[in-house]
Amino acid sequence: MDARKTIESGKAVLGIEFGSTRIKAVLVDEDHIPIAQGSFEWENQLVDGLWTYSKEVIWFGLQQCYSDLRADVKKRYDLEIEHLAAIGISAMMHGYMPFNKEGHLLAPFRTWRNTNTGPAAAELSKLFVYNIPLRWSISHLYQAILNGEAHVQDIGYLTTLAGYIHWKLTGEKVLGVGDASGMLPVDPGTGNYRADMVEKFEKLVAPYKFRWKLRDILPRVLQAGEAAGCLTETGAKRLDISGHLHAGVPLCPPEGDAGTGMVATNAVRPRTGNVSAGTSSFSMIVLEKELSKPNEMIDIVTTPDGNLVAMVHCNNCTSELNAWVKMFREYQQLLGAEDNNIYGRLYTEALQGDPDCGGLVAFNYVSGEPVTGFAEGRPLFVRGANDNFTLANFFRAQLYGSIAVLKIGNDVLFREEQVKVERITGHGGLFKTPVVGQKFLAAALNSPISVMETAGEGGAWGIALLASFLVNNCSGMSLPDFLDEIVFSGNTGTEIAPDPADVAGFEAYLENYKAAFPIEEAAVRCKK
Figure 1 (cartoon, one colour):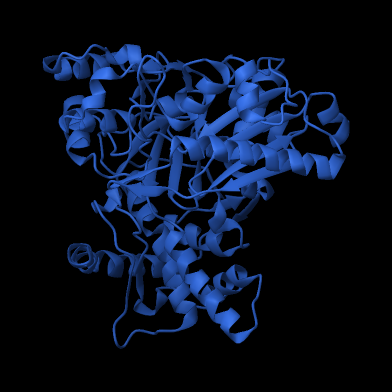
Figure 2: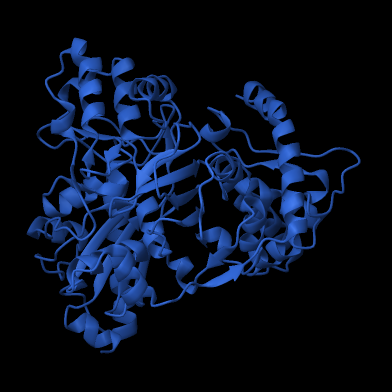
């Protein structure tokens, strides 16, 4: 069936993901090939010291993204989207969206980027004997309690961005297990929130005499493939303001971008992993067993079907790199010689740099970086007078700097915990230029890195695959088998092995990087 007939017959599947800088929609056919796309660019705002997106821009962005998708379908196929086989909603993981019993948002959405939850995360980590990251919903909730925020008393429901959108489209207060595991740790045996931690939290906050219980305000946890509700009449009008889309479309459990990244790279089996590198970066290694002990650099979440995953999450990745490229583009414009391939040219030039970047060091800390212990960040470039200061080394240092924190966290996994991994797949903006990001990540992790042709499709495609798994898994396959046999069918992408010289060079770079921490600390202290 060609793409036009797929859309016309209502067999296309839609995936929508709310990323940090872009909301993206991907429409796929029955072979899971993208046949239309839409997008809307947005930026978080720092309001009263907290990173947020307003409720108004969330819905405006979704509607504009869907309208852009409609326009693409109209242009390509001269059709309107009337019916869909399934829909999936994904978004930036975790964060904090509290609502009262009437469904009104009680506080602005607090994103993963906020690092104000240190006291809460530290106390909960000690109480649970489990690493509780700053960005997790339970950290935000307890920090709001410690801060004495008045809205906490009135909470009737607490969810993530993906959970919020899904709720308003379907009426269902549910969440996929992957995103739920970043609200509160999940027990892989039960597929639900850890009962012992719920009990400990209830005792911890009992003196406050809240009107709610934790277990009553959290979303119901669902596994990949479980029914998660259908698009209501109201939901259809919220999504498609043109009124063409019909209600009744089934939705899969909403997921975070970490889960959709795992699906998009076919990395949901134990001993597989993926690295997502864009505005932020994170690695996800699917575990065979629990780690020997908690580590503040390692977050334990789950795959969309409930397997434990060791996650290293870095708040910063390509934002500072993009800023430097933007400045070089301005220089091109000044010369009257603008080049649309400036990213490709600068990234490729970095391949000519010294393996250790000639001694140059770059910190990409636009915001705080919890893995390395920075509550705040300041972008910083450092060099010595005798270092080899060339364009190639400069951009190589910026590229190394964008994945240095990721390496620090993964060194704990591979060297201390002896975690085994057979395949790591990269996806996201860092890998759009062929070879470069892949080669440098292979050097950083000292592991072969694969990139698939579909890597650029990202999480919107990943959540579309989960939506397809809901309605097209007629034989009852597991999610890993469905991806292996139906979606990817043996496609493991293009692999690059680590170059020993690059591995040694990255290790040397990292020593310089760590030695420069006091400089970054001084920059944070002095530049307010």
